[in-house]
Amino acid sequence: MPPALRLSLRAVILIGLYLLATDFADRFIAAPGSVSLLWPAAGLALAAVVRYGLRWSWFVPVAMLVAHLTFSPAPASFIPFSLLSNLAGVLAGAWWIRRDGLPEQMDTRWGFRVLVGAILMAGVSAAIGVGGMHLTGMLPPGTAVNGLIKWFLGDLLGIVAVAPTLLLFTIRHATRHTRPRDPHYGSEPEKLVWNIALVVSFLLMAWGGAAGSPYALGLSALPLAVAVWSALRFEPIRTAVAVLLTTLLIGTLVGRGLSGFQPPTRALDSAILLSYLCAMAILPMILA
Image (cartoon, rainbow, N blue to C red):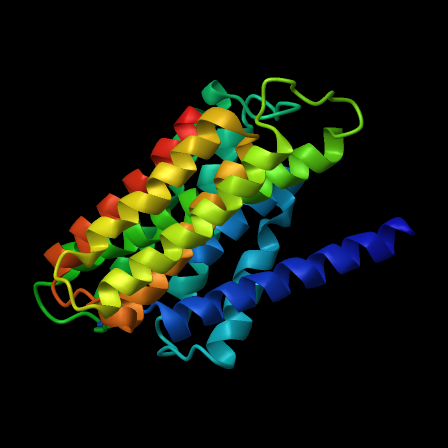
């Protein structure tokens, strides 16, 4: 494929995926208020800019502008802050991660560097975004700190849920012909049992919520246990996919109040929930 066509196709795919992630957050997992409970687009943006270089950060504000002009309207005075917050955040996070180069494959040390970059990205984006909301009058008086916490944790959760899968997949794809299969990983029959266990854990979690139990969220420990099993026995990409699916499922169930789960109505409730989900997403990836 000619280089110009390949780069154009990559740009279209990245913008399209970013728009899909934004629409997903707006439609399915937007918490009450003006700050989304989970922002998967942040994970996509960080993974893409880390993988392809800082120069590719341009697609983030372009996609965000398209979103604001179509399905995700915002006050005209806030749009510049929205574009700047997402662009500055991904530039800061990706710069930190890439400053010593990219490894041929992810290890624990590099994974912690990615985590620090994710925290930096979420912090920069939240500071600019919530500052813009305050200056443009979008936040009720006295809610700036709450908005800052929710924006930061929502971005961080989106990054730790989505970015590892994309980074592992692209790095794995680029080096798969040069790396032998590790004989210490679990066998194919064990992987099949693991797949079944993951699906069953999701069904049990949804059943617990539908049954009306006030402690149904505690069943999220089941997919967490399955993800830890994967971290100890299988390739990291399998663990990352499990974390991605679990986070998106819980975010959807809680954010939309499905299967008996109640969406958070107070800033403290949102902060506790998001902190728990972030910890649940990070722990298996540290072990993987």
